[in-house]
Image 1: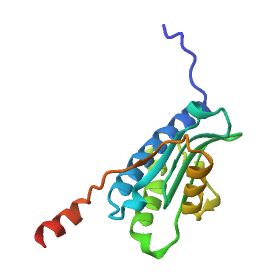
Image 2 (image 1 turned 90 degrees about the vertical axis):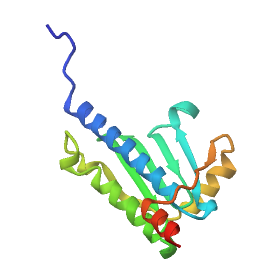
Image 3 (image 1 turned 120 degrees about the vertical axis):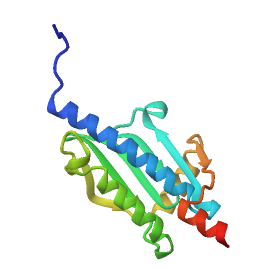
Image 4 (image 1 turned 60 degrees about the horizontal axis):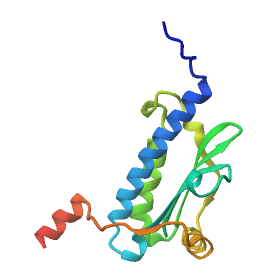
Length: 160
């Protein structure tokens, strides 16, 4: 006999949002690792529970060109994102945007979470946010992601 109470729809949805968020975070780190410029491969990853109990943010990943945040709201968990709009970074930001929307599509999750993407305010001054976090919160860990050229770039480099 199963004595565990069944999960509510909102609990199932929140779990699906977290699963998608973690997958997006993993892909974002892979994209960051493929950026040749060292200055753009730094990132700050903040588990808000470890540093402070400020809601609604649960987790954040901030780099000079990407912003990703898991937030709690009245409607459940949301994924908030941002990206630098500089045309020099479009190859990387396009990959990031595609990952955010692809990994939250109904066909990729057990529960429909397409409405979990917070699009009412997309952050575009990512480098300013990154610099502010470094300056105002030096306790947040800032790390350099090791450069790993993508498979396509590796092939190009090996031929050259």
